[in-house]
Every structure is written in C-alpha cells, then in structure tokens.
Length: 82
Image (tube, rainbow, N blue to C red; front, side, top):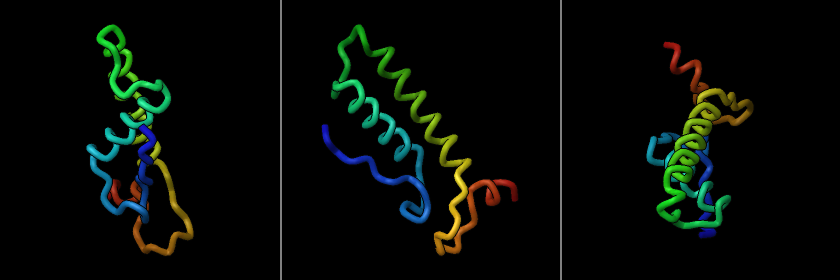
C-alpha cells in the first residue's frame, strides 16, 4: 500500500491522462482510509471519495501556473483558451 503517487504536473509528466489522475486518486483514498479495497458496505463511500479526489486533482492541475520551470511549455489555461 505504500506505492508512491507520481507528480502529475509539467514538466514532470508532460501528458497527464484521466487514468493517471484516477490512479493517483485511488492510491490517495487507499492510503487515507487504510483499506486496499473497501468492504461492500463502504464501497459507495470509497468510490465517491475517489471521484471527488480525482475531480479536485483535475481542477488543481488545470489551474496551476508553473513559473520558472524552464521547460518552455505554456501553462494549461493558456493552451486551453486557444
């Protein structure tokens, strides 16, 4: 259960997929809850938490502005607005 969550922002990860975000969210919820897989009576809460963390992660990544990284890549908001 101690698998590391990888950094999901540029320049560390040039192309972040939904699968990357969902895997990180799942790993986070597993770590916080202490369960690798929830019992049947906790499955809905577990799944809702994974979805909420994934959505918060997408929002964070979409709004981050990385300065001074030297990667030459535009921030996500500027790229999305064109």
